[in-house]
Image 1 (cartoon, rainbow, N blue to C red):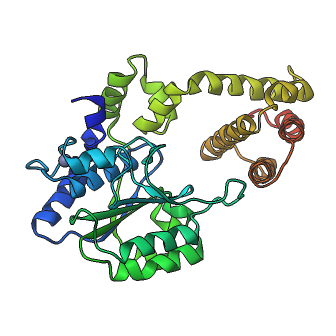
Image 2 (tube, helix red, strand yellow):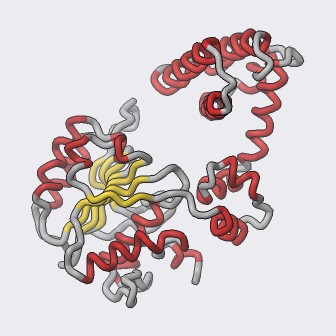
Length: 340
Ligand SMILES: [Zn+2]
């Protein structure tokens, strides 16, 4: 199977979910609204892409899998299928059979203004979609709408989609993707059929991962929470090396072997990098919490960290100053606790 064709298939550990859908389809009882829920990196997008392709394919195989070569499949590959929609943070776009579910030269129906600070799925994106749904499917087949990340729908956005979920146009399918079902408003959640995705058994996960990255090992997979696509992404972004650098940084500042101001000067230049470091920090603190190493001071620090992350995302906060103040507090905290 070529790399591109793999984009039209569910992942090896998603057979149970696939069979559930395929059987419903054979009975002609395929629900119109699905909620695909599971942690980051277990393959929700892969599954949504394979399902969308299957619904739009002109000649799916005996198990309902898309062929990857017919007109519908080719249009989906490039994000140019007029009946395949993506609602996301970038607006209302053509759904594409790509890693990110969108393509640079794919269809674009509505996008937020470039300088907009908005970080949710805009109600205007839904309006744009609803307008498209008033006419029948362009190719006369199914219509698929993927909403990702569905947790980022505002109240208004969710409300404007409700009627479509309750009374969808014929042969129209909505796929909501979220890490937790509770991330969706009850009104939406209760109208969707839930399809859960969990990390695959470690052996299957490692097999899949090693086929792409022969150097991958079980420790890395475990650190990624057993989520193979997350581990793969880390390897592609050289994440293990970054995480090692961050680990050393926090250990050395906490152990008073590295000056916080000097560390902030080195690590605080880039806002995104500081954001990624803060999320790593948060992850490590939560692991300590689960390990029972916890105090009120840890809790206070975690609150500071989350506030810092929020300021980084919302405002023009100076990343270096923010990192400085966090590292100074971290040194104080580590000085009072052997576990840090
Ligand atoms: Zn096809």
